[in-house]
Every structure is written in C-alpha cells, then in structure tokens.
Length: 122
Length: 111
Image 1: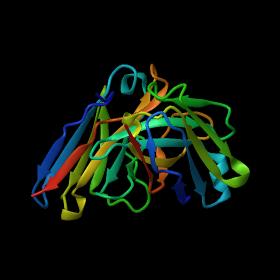
Image 2: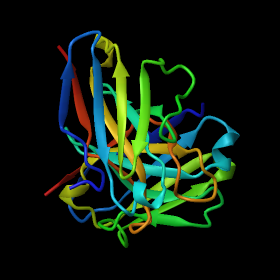
Image 3: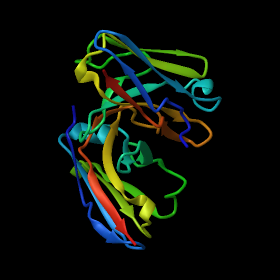
Image 4: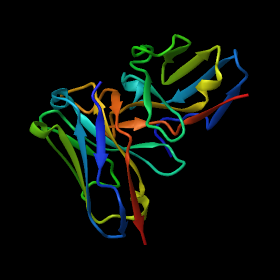
C-alpha cells in the first residue's frame, strides 16, 4: 500500500491562494490516478479533483473549477493542488487519495493520506 | 445534498445485523457504475471497506458484505462489534457530472 503524506494546509484569508502537496512512498504512485477529497468539520466526504496517471485528464468539482488546479510530478511521486481565490466554504481537511484506476477518474480509492487542514478566514 | 443518499444514522446491539443503504440514480448505479464503501473512525482517514459492490480488501473481516440491486446498494455488518462504531460512506461515479461522488455518510452506533 502506498503511503501518502500531505502538506501545505494553513490558515489563510478569503481570496488568498494556497498550494497543497502530497508525496507518495514509492514509485507505484506514478501508475495510478490521484485525487483530492475534502471533508468539512463534522461533515461528509466531497471529491474535489482528480488526475490520471499521465496527467492526460483532469476533473474538478463544479464549485472549484476555474479556481483550483491539480497537477502531478511522477518523477517526484508528488501530487499538487493549487487553490486560488479561496472561499470560506473551501475550509476543510484535504485528503490525498490514490485510485486503483490509471487512465480514468472512475474506480475506488485504496490509499488515503491523513489530510492537511485548510482554514479560510473572512 | 449528495448524489448518493444514505441514512444519517443507524444503530444496533453487539452481535446484531446492521445494514446501511445507499441510493443512487440513473447516472450512477443505473448507468452501471460500481459502488464502493469506506469506513472512517473519528480523527482518522477513511479506509476502503468494500469495493466493486461486494469485494473485500485484504484484512477486512468477512462480517462486512456488500450488495446492489438496481439503483440502490447496501452494506451489511453481520454480528456488529463495538469497534465497528464509525462513519460509513458509499462512493460511485456519476456519468452526468463526470466525477466520483460520495454519499452523505452514515454514523453507526453500537448500543
């Protein structure tokens, strides 16, 4: 099982920008789709964004499309989420998640990081 | 409001059978996409519990099982134990949204 470690979460003002990162423990990271899933305090899971193994395809939750950008660097076993124009509703714990699928956004998630907390203040 | 609908809470005494439902629509289960289930204990990351409707990852006890019929799916816990008290989320793919989707989650309380 790939171990995933997120970083970059912090307290930030509304309208600000933040870049989250996630590092995988081994090179298997580069063979699979990767996603960001968030969880607001006391709430459920919400898929935010995903990217195929070769960055060929990306997808976004409608409310973040145009503000967030997902990318990856397989040579560094790393996943990123650039978050711009942050809103209070973006405050959440952001999980880095590995899919079992390589080439599409379908499939289930078999590895989860512990999450990094983003708090957007007004 | 989630694309997949789950009951907010269920409960059961130790040893009982508990089921959690997950209702989708024509763009998820109705379009043939699989259902997957995750378990989340407080303060921890979700863990894959059931994938592709009824398959268990290595290490998941066989008291957990999954099923699906039409546009609904279910997670069953046969002989619930105190350690099963957690939140449970179903997940699938939505053909219209072109994205993975989760249910709102169900809190299982073991009485």
